[in-house]
Amino acid sequence: MDNIVYIDEIEIKNKTLLIRVDFNVPLDSNGNITDDSRIRAVLPTINYCLDEKAKIVLMSHMGRPKGKPVPELSLLVVAKRLSRLLDKEVKFVNDCIGELAENAVKSSSYGDIMLLENLRFHSEETANDDNFGKELASLCDIYVNDAFATAHRSHASNVAVTKYVNTCAAGFLIRKELNYFRRAVENPMRPFVAIIGGAKVSGKIEVLSNLAEKVDKLIIGGAMSNTFLKALGHDIGASLVENDMVEYAKKTLNKIKEKKIKLYLPVDVVVADKFKPDAESKVTTVQEIPKDWLALDIGPATVTLFSEAIQNAKTIVWNGPMGVFEFDAFSRGTYAMVSNVANAYALTIVGGGDTDVALHRAGEFAKMSYVSTGGGAFLELLEGKVLPGIQALIECSKKNKLMPEPEQQL
Ligand code: AMP
Image (cartoon, rainbow, N blue to C red):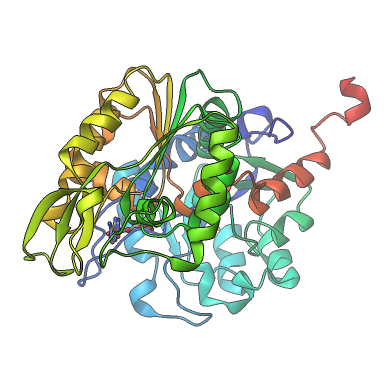
């Protein structure tokens, strides 16, 4: 990660910068932005470039238009919001390549800022097409990537493009994300506790395997704990379970035991007679889940147990809700954990789309040390993978004219 060049390590004054950002913000049915956190997250990078009098060309994707223009997924609405946040005109360009884009860049001055139309209106973007990357690269002197949430994808705007630029750098958001991740997972203050929840073991197998090498305590909640409870021989009624993952769960339990990691699973759950917000519900121990009922949340004794387990933690990483928090009746466990983690005297790092939503709803977002902007990207880091977008930056940084050769560093 140290092999990446960052934007404040190179000269950008009077240069044209093509910056990949992630402006994939949620919209309501009227096309209004419902949460502009992703735009705000890259303001430090944008403001720095403006202060340095660079010409800024921003590019992003939004939604999944599948390679053709979809008016509802135009980034125009983002350009307007960004303009308001910066209190400065943000020129909107109706295409991200071709004459329109070239002319817009040529006719702008240093210190100007523009946003190109949705990259995914061209199928070449997700295909990581070389020519498309080359066309994007032709718009700039320096390529900058600050789209952490897209870094786990191999797309033209974060991989192919890097082959055709002479100088590239990462922005401040990527630096922040990687620094927090490193502090949490690569070099944690101990005890290091991971809290993993959500729906499926299968989606987080590699996360569990990788974390089992590193953590002191592992807390598992949500539907994913059902598969572990089943592996331990509990009858979990009609709860969501992945039967084909029970064997894997048994192996993981053995590994955890061998490594002397302290494992915490629910001891009681809130069960429902159907998967509905207005279902009849009650609290039972995990030994007494009624047949045909579903465990949809962790129970109060489990909240106390999990809360005790994180008392002495120095580092906490959390991904995935403790229950079906979208239904009020089954949201208490998740919100109680939000509050416990928020009040812990630890470095607290939270990632993953759903956990992020829960933090916002509970109003505890600001109390976490860091909330990652990348759901999938954060999970892949937790899996121990090198993200393609980050790898491309590392490769590209090697050819940066301003970067010393490795021999010279010795
Ligand atoms: P994930 O994307 O794997 O983090 O899963 C998040 C989803 O898991 C949320 O939509 C929750 O509603 C769901 N979930 C959490 N706990 C349960 C449970 N006990 N039963 C069914 N779904 C659950």
